[in-house]
Image (cartoon, rainbow, N blue to C red; front, side):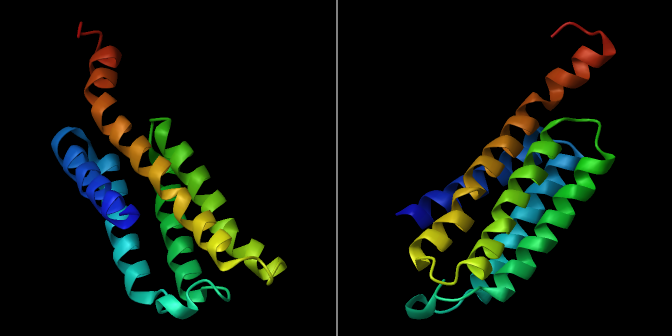
Length: 142
């Protein structure tokens, strides 16, 4: 059920970014789609999932972090900083498993997956507020 909820939210955010978002929002949504697809293909099979450090998933998370950071560095909006910071928190979950190999697989998996939801919500809100920000900056009443 949790996976279905995530995919519904992911595709809803993609639609919102395409409909109301600008370039930054659309690129961020695309990064989420690509990161999700790459993670789904590289994560260990269910019986072994999160038993050890998921190196391939860690690499995907670092690429996603690099993408979000690139958006944050060139954007004039505030939301990309939040998304990059949250992704940094998610990526440090892998370091936690390296430092504490006895970390329960469920806790490791939850630490990685939990942060995806706030990231998607922030991208959706950034997309929905984009028009308001543009109108406010141009002095045009909403």
